Length: 500
Image (cartoon, rainbow, N blue to C red; front, side, top):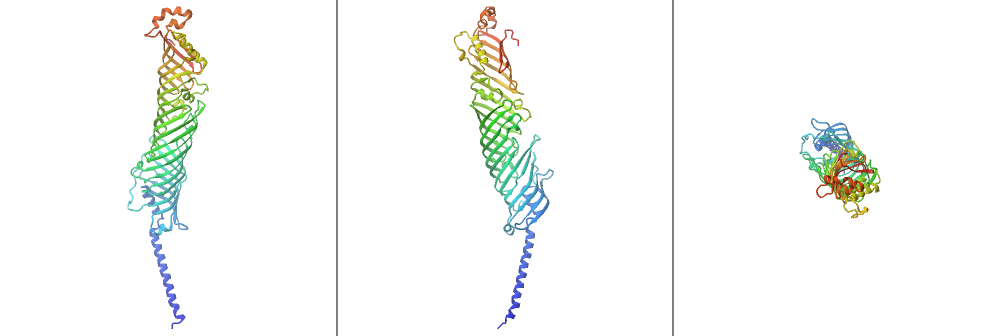
């Protein structure tokens, strides 16, 4: 029978053997981890380089082990041959998991990028060749609050976008990434909150990378455009390739104002457009704008900071249009208006009415002057021009306006302008300054009545011999006429000499 003493060596041998095995396992594991450890400077730089198709340099890296494996990299630069850095990161914190490390899974639980700066030139350098056989690394969550993106344009200007909030999930080159962000827009300045999906990234053709989601644009300050005021808000949905993102939604400006007019109005609109996410250029396929009792349809483009619009009225009043540009509360003319116009708003740092360029045709039907003095002069002109004085009462006299207009530097130049009242038609040309409100129009007045009949009284006897010289066709008389002064105090004058 063995004694108790005889069992001790056997137990000791087993403990010793177990210790040796444990040490061997730990040593083997350490060697294995040392060879496969993903958080060295070289492996982190290589992984980032494969993801960005670029060269990556890391200024300093510190490895972490507990409670989670990972590393902290500082002064990271991403660049391509012969070009300035495409990205810089002040501090990059990578947090993995022991499960992923031990199972050789290429996955980071969370990555936090601090002070990320992206600089996209007009011509992005070609990608750096990488080993495509190596598996890509997936990031569960990427937090990059405080990121800024600078996009260079062919015009030489740079658009800057700042992201107070930027969170991406399921980040991998071949995966669809989910995102939520708050972005400070460049032009006009404002805050965009958005969420949606992005990718997979197409490195050979970034513009075809898919993107979709919804957005809410708030506090867009229109005072960025010199001469305007108001805060715009908009919301809608977007989808498409990054170079061709279709955007639909609604916008509201509760206090839109052209500063020289000092009249704020609420403008509501629906919009349907296409945005190039690579350079910010926009095609406005349709914009429906409504304010007061006026509705305008428009389409156009935004390239850089230049807005171009083609506009048509489907329901408009001339007083609503004038309210946007005229300071006085007493608007000179009222009535329905139809028009077509081409407008360009360039980025020059001038007041709105001086820098906008507009060309169009218009017609005002059944227009009426709001000033009693002005309307009285029109009534008097109509009464003198008619053959039959009793045909119309003063209260029924109206004016119709139609013609072409070209607006430059605050001055509207009119051509083919006609002005009609019962008994007379005026064909005119000239200018109207929308800033000073000065009128300088000249042309001819064709009357039903003869010159002597229109003059009346003793003048009719004196002018009777001249009637044949001023008679043309079916008109009783055609005489030179001019309208000068201001819209508040216009002056109508008939000149028998044709001189100003």
